[in-house]
Amino acid sequence: MAAAAPVETTSGKDAIAEGLLDLLRPAIHQLDQHVHSVRESQVELREHIDCLATELCRINEHQKVALDLDPYVKKLLNARRRVVLVNNILQNAQERLRRLNHNVAKETARRKTMLEASGVFTSRSPSKP
Image (tube, rainbow, N blue to C red; front, side, top):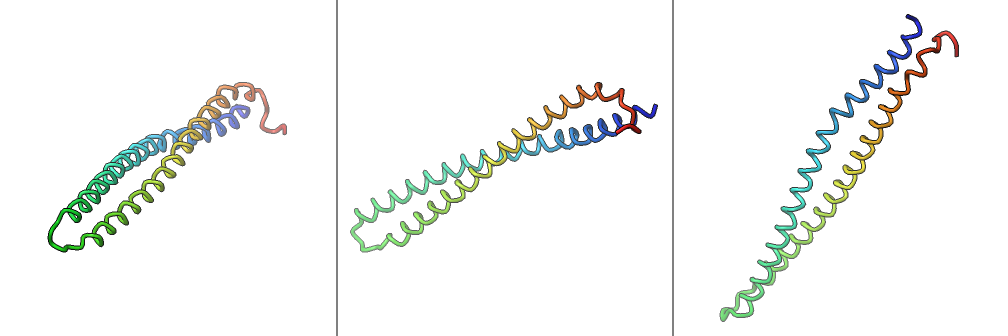
């Protein structure tokens, strides 16, 4: 009976760790999906800003009235630059999430292998080092 206690403690810790990993995995996956959808919408927004800036330049060139649209075009281009910056930040965050998810999967596999191999250590006595 005393020989089984260390195995139960180790497997208990492994079970808790595996449970935490199983708990985190869906959250990481969901966050990754949200980041992906935000990146797609940012690309779409960037394309709309480009079209709008082009259209404003075209209107400005063809308009008879001396209406200066250059400040608005500059504002749109500044907004586009910020969208690209945020998109790069999201891309880096998504890559980190991908690596974290990969590491979680690798650690889970390693712990499962350790649990399967733990049968080798059941014959050790807890009193012997």
